[in-house]
Length: 262
Image (cartoon, rainbow, N blue to C red):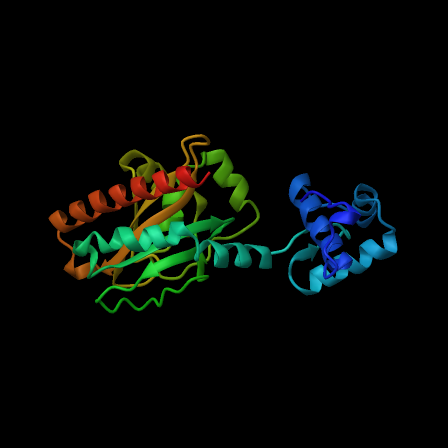
């Protein structure tokens, strides 16, 4: 955020809020955690003022204070970003695209993004089948067992996956959830080969989901994913093939929309 000149500030502007925004901008630009002294130096503010700003932002969840005293961006920023995203034209485009595909009326369709080892749902449409999962905007689930999560993880390399999960166990939601990184990597290899992910009772017993990544052509990594969920017993091979084709078409449409927004 460019620091406005004093003469540009409206009378109603609150200087402390502007300084707090500068703290967030500096941490976002740095890409790493910064100590109080480093932040104060970069912002050219007294340490006491910087401490007050960081403490307030930490209490709000906008910053996180690490054990070594350094600061990094807080998780609440992600929630705010996804709340914003859910109201953008991308989410509306998702809803409009679904309206053009009446063949998906029975399935619960979702649009999700990845936040580290979790997926966050930013748009959804409930299906007519009771699935046992109440999707809502902001819902977080482990990426390693969801169709959207595995679709997005599949666009990372095995080295990146190992780094992402290093020091973290794989939480199990059902007996079919991956318990080891080895089995997850094998699943992701299959996902890359076929172009879509399958959650076969890994999130909820009796439920199967199919997910397709929306891949940024510049980075070759997923920026989001779309998926449908259904009861496992009612899925035929022909129905599954139709759903995969529809999801791939939906992903292409949303990617075009994202590119247009840049």
